[in-house]
Amino acid sequence: MLSRRNFFQGAGALTAAVSASAVSRVAMAGLPEPVLQGAADSAPPLQPSTGRPYRPVLTLNGWTLPWRMNQGVKEFHLVAEPVLRELAPGMKAHLWGYNGQSPGPTIEVVEGDRVRIFVSNKLPEHTSIHWHGQRLPNGMDGVSGLTQKSIQPGKTFVYEFVARRPGSFMYHPHADEMTQMAMGMMGLWVTHPAPAAKKQQGLIEPVDRDFCFLLNAFDIEPGAATPKIMTMLDFNLWCWNSRVFPGIDTLNVRKGDRVRIRVGNLTMTNHPIHLHGHEFTVTGTDGGPVPKTARWPEVTTDVAVGQMRQIEFIADEEGDWAFHCHKSHHTMNAMGHGLPTMIGVDHSQLARQITRLVPDYMVMGERGMADMAEMTMPLPDNTLPMMSGDGPFGGVEMGGMFSVLKVRKDQKAGDYSDPGWYRHPPGEVAFE
Ligand SMILES: [Cu+2]
Image (cartoon, rainbow, N blue to C red; front, side, top):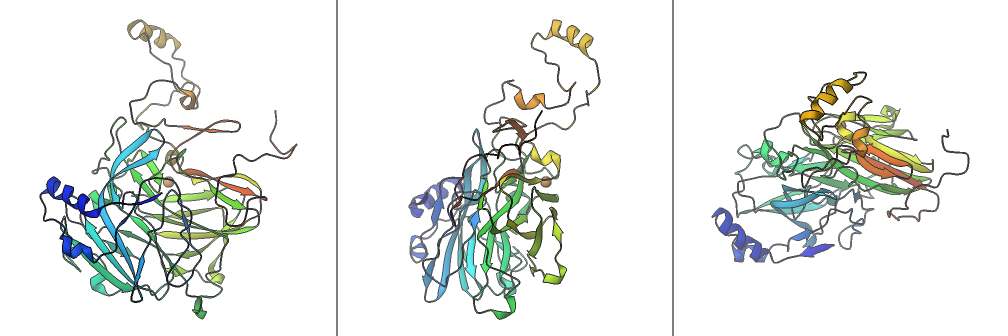
């Protein structure tokens, strides 16, 4: 799925589009070739072929950025650029991101790695990258105007530091942040613990499955494709890694696996993330591993804005377990919020009168909103239904921040592929 394309052609197009100074061919020649991703599917974990070994993560509907080793330094090349992202089958959005996708690729390194990141700007305006949660020299912190000059269109900046602290982190611009984050610019960073780091042992345990994703949100008018960047709270597409249900991949594990899920929040509100069928503990935040004495069992953990939560559990109950944000409006796709409640209102008389004027008039909401899930009213192009997704027993009536943890006893070790719907043992399904 990974594709390499001629960066210089892209740079030429950029020059024409924004009349910025061209990325110097000579300067670019020494940089790692940028790797781009064309698809919104979850790429399999990227097994490290160079550098120190670690157990890679699976980024839900994302991917990990390959690197090159240069005299002991891990070199990555991020390209900030406009991208076309499929939010779910049937809807594509014009976003800004990195290396072909929004969010950008996950960066995975090992505690103690010296990391050099080249950031090329192919956006029409300046940018920067802040490495959220990292210990680093102040001038590498990526705050435009405060710790560095902003990266102008067509320019490439270099960030270099040692990944000192293991854990789950994020990256995002710290330049025209409101616009650039509303357009989808963000990514995950995982620093795996060094095998020799004794003090972390026991606090960051090896796991069988390691998932990660970012919570993000967009406000896109039905029928449009570009997010409204001035929206502060009333977003209509609540995403995991710029995907909405039914476009979010399921989390597929083997019964008995120790599972870690790292969740970061770069939306404008908090998200209580809820798992069915299991209890988990929060084993880490972007501040580091949580001491064992400070952990307690939960089935929901609130992830506030700018936070990361790392949850862990043993997947010991077979089945298809819902995993979602518990704010019910966040498990819906594009919808209006200003509608009156019609439950209990008899508007049959009114409907008859309106039908005389508007023959296609539909009575909605009298019995609740579930009819919406099966509504066949035509939608504008490039728009998702508010509630959708089919399960083995009918419509799931969900959207937004919703996925499924699939626990199977016959899933192979390390196999992240979708096993299909759960086949319930006889007598173990609620009945009429
Ligand atoms: Cu939410």
